[in-house]
Image 1: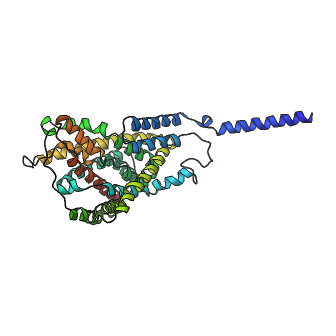
Image 2 (image 1 turned 90 degrees about the vertical axis):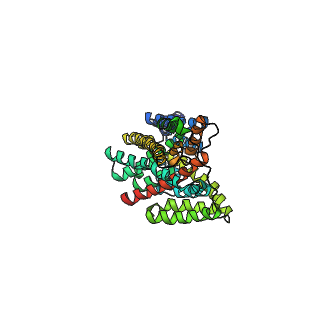
Image 3 (image 1 turned 60 degrees about the horizontal axis):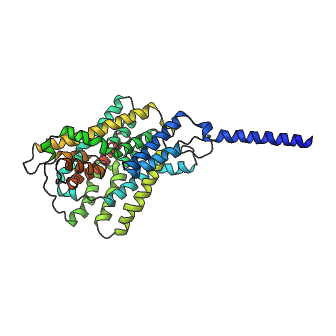
Length: 390
């Protein structure tokens, strides 16, 4: 009799443990929101691998979405929003804006500003494309977002993921997941979004304009540019110093010729590690219970609109410039799209669309001018927004 009771007690204990185990599984806690976000994560991974749409961004973000949307029982300290969890600790680099300046350091160490220095007026194209940022800002205000939230959303128009993360960490931490995923998504979709706008806004004759070869830029110009650029930009918008300072510092490491080891580390190890951590944590931050909301949908819509406006304004500005330029000095309007900060993908799009209409007209080197100007422009625009809204 004792053995039967003991056995009965054991079976009851085991059944209780089994029920508790089942309560802790993802199957018991799954919602339709989790499934939806997992599907979106798989789409991101597919686009990154199959079509090579910014795979260094979409694959980590997509896999991060899978990690962030595995359903779990609350209180286990495994979710990205649970204090003390490993993911939460890694996410501090996003929340506190640590990763973006380090990425800008690497971007500076990888970027050759020669195309811009050889033809400085191309900087104006990069400035014109930033209109998308302020258009999205006004649109967000019209939809009822608070001014600080609107400023964080607006920066999506610069097509600059690290800047979007940095600004949202300062102005709208609660919207960071939607803003970051939107910014990186549209960066990856540059080859899809921009070409139809470029074709719509240009004539066959404009698409075949040949530009003069860029002049040779001296080593002295390359070395002094990051120093002068920092002093000029930072004095105008000191609030952009974390991004601008690291960008120009990285470029000085590259161009001075005596810090090759530091330049190599910045342009490889540092930028790769930070890109990896940003991708996986931003993806994980799309936890369905936090991410899926009406605000997220509006942010994605505003991001698309701002990106379209930025491309439109870049191309339109080149067409306006050509009205005042002599024959032989005109600029091919197809490089107007590269004023956004998606380096070097936007410049590649300029080149690829140009080659469709003239197989020997290579625009890549010219397009890199406004493209790198867009990097500086987005950081300056971020500084302006911070100065007014922080």
